[in-house]
Image (cartoon, rainbow, N blue to C red; front, top):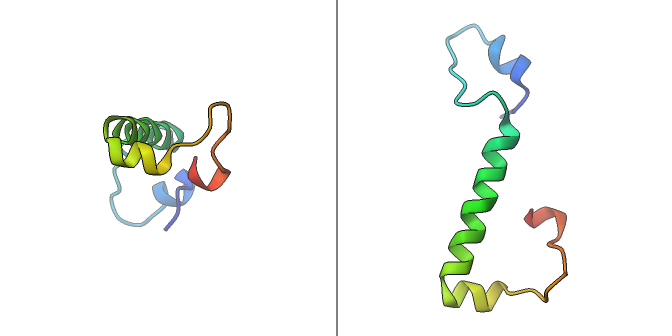
Length: 60
């Protein structure tokens, strides 16, 4: 699996890209995940981090 657009568009069969940039897909996913966490009391309590503490890079 790859997100390299050149590799994807050079494939010998038809591939449709949903977006011009994978970054926008990732950012939207992060926003939706944060919204889900914030709206669920259990998730919010479990995953709460102190104010001003950035998330580890692996979590976005």
